[in-house]
Every structure is written in structure tokens, then in C-alpha cells.
Image (cartoon, rainbow, N blue to C red):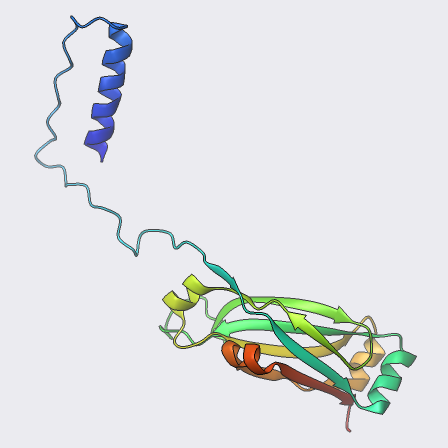
Length: 182
């Protein structure tokens, strides 16, 4: 690779120096030193991985008990719905793993006003990262929690949804919010 670059630069210099004349001889090629190691082509391990972002949207249904909905409205709280995308690592000894999620692939969050409703999440992940680092399918963990009111955070609890992403895409997910202790 270095030799080809040197030759190309030499040819360019010869062309520019000659300004169109043909009487200037081409420069002699320099032979590589005997101790120089041959250039190695990049290996997949040394090349940066190209991201391949895919979107697998899915629906999450959010429901409330009557008492939880009344409390959310009384406290003027909204509901945060977050999705964490993750996977089980192919190499469990790899550095930088999340102790709870393994390989974190990304996340997103939507904020909803109180009331039974559905929200569609984007489900965007890097398919190249999944193929390279994750054993099996990517997973999604959905959590819902009151936002903008500490009193609501203490009074309301919501279930979680955790599933492989292809199943979430096919069936959707559900979280249900109730008053704490109910």
C-alpha cells in the first residue's frame, strides 16, 4: 500500500516537473528494505464496524386502575414510557457490559398525559452490532413511571414488559399502573 502511494506520488511529480515534455526520464523505483514487513490487509477485527440501523416499531398499551388514574390527574403528573434495547453478550467476559442488561443497544422515551392509551415506539437498533456482539435476538425492556410529580412517583407503580424484540413487534406490550400497595 505504501509502495503504491509512493509510486503514484512519483508519477505525479514526474508529470508536473516535465510539464508535458517527454525527455525527462521517470524516477527510479526504490526497492523496499529487506527488513520491512509486508503490508497486511485490514482484518475484520481491525476495521471499524459499519452501523446498520433498523427500525422495528411496536405498540405498547398503557392502562391504569381507576384510583391510579385519578391520582395522576389530581397531581397533574404525566407518564414516562421508556424502552431499553439490550442483548445477552456472545462474550460474557467482555468489558463495559451493563450488569443488568448485558449489551445495551440503545433506548428511547415517550411522555404521555394520563389516560389509557397506546404508544408506538421506534425500536431502532444497530443490526450489525446485534449480529457481532449479541447471542440470539435483541430484547426490549419497557418501564413506565410518573414524571413531573414526586408525589405521583411515590404513589403510583407500573408493571414492566420485557421480551425479545421480534415478539414485541408481533404482539406489542402492555404496562398497567396502580396505586402503590394495590
